[in-house]
Length: 173
Image (cartoon, rainbow, N blue to C red; front, side, top):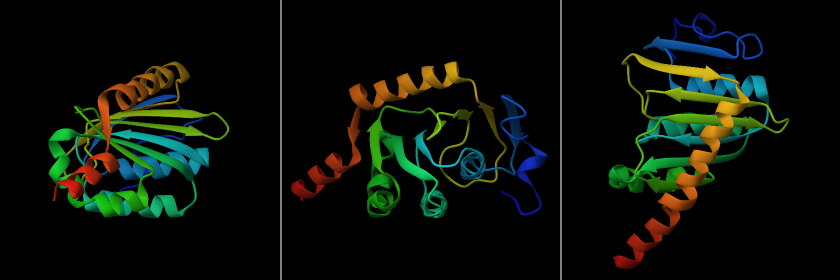
């Protein structure tokens, strides 16, 4: 988030507004995740993106250090495999499970231990940029259930676990 910006300039507390959106260059996906976790408490996270950067993984490292993430499930695109493999050691220290699939979606799902849910559909990859990005944030349980089922199908039926791919690459060398 830009230092001059406050998340409250763009979003209201989840309990006050079940559907909201923004278009800005001031917010990053990691800002939104941190904001959601502060409201929900301990939660499991599912994140899909085309690619990920070291800077974003660093942000996730500190978010996870807070103790609010019980499990982090990540789906990235096969086309970004070379970049992802270079970050593999760092990713495995932060992300519980990472999968590679034909994926261009940018979805963030959060489910608290109490069963509260948040879905964020965003234009931003898990990279740092100063471009305007947009997102829709909702606490709608039906929307969460639909997206969760589709992400689980992507993971179960259309992806390769990153650890498996990395192990094969090591054996091939």
